[in-house]
Image 1 (tube, helix red, strand yellow):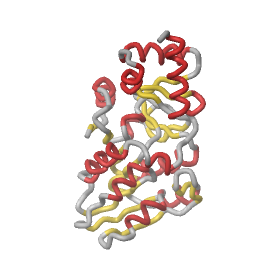
Image 2 (tube, helix red, strand yellow; image 1 turned 120 degrees about the horizontal axis):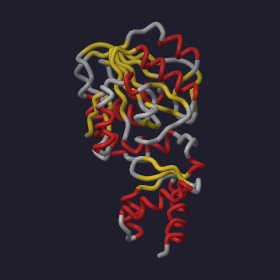
Image 3 (cartoon, rainbow, N blue to C red; image 1 turned 135 degrees about the vertical axis):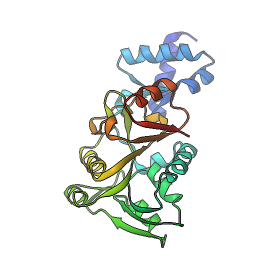
Image 4 (cartoon, rainbow, N blue to C red; image 1 turned 180 degrees about the horizontal axis):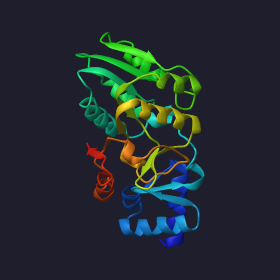
Length: 253
């Protein structure tokens, strides 16, 4: 297969799947990973794709924020491992915050029942899960609920967070890079995440490695604002070392 034919197939798969991975394409197309990387670079130069960690995204989908339902279908096992590791960071008592998202939802799904914790969340789904645990004192942040993510956002959320002291905030992110930090497509959701980080003594970001290298329009945290990043083992050593150099701890699980 010639390069133009191969690149057309890669572009079609990127648009159909929303993302392509180097390793998967190499296996499907029976070529080396280096050949796939050259094809992705060529497509990026022509404006069709944007390279991200481990693969590429079609340009027209970069700022299209996925729904909560669609995100639940991807990388479930990775998110469960991340959630199990995040649970180890929970104190025996105190106040924690769970941001809206599928990885933070996984934390709620595996939440321990052997300790007294106050939990604040802006997620309707997480609140429903934790409301069934007797040892949790649950507080739900009010505000406008975004149907795409199930997150409460807006002035009510910001005002409430301005008056609380949180021991640990667990935040999700749509993308992270060494240069830009933690980013998300939506302005009001970025504002809510920013306020969550500001209210917490310790900030833990939980995200799978596919978000590495992705930049979105709104930054809600610089890397130095994050104490710990919990991700999966697919995050490459080079990126991990660069993140470590900023003073942020990185755990791959």
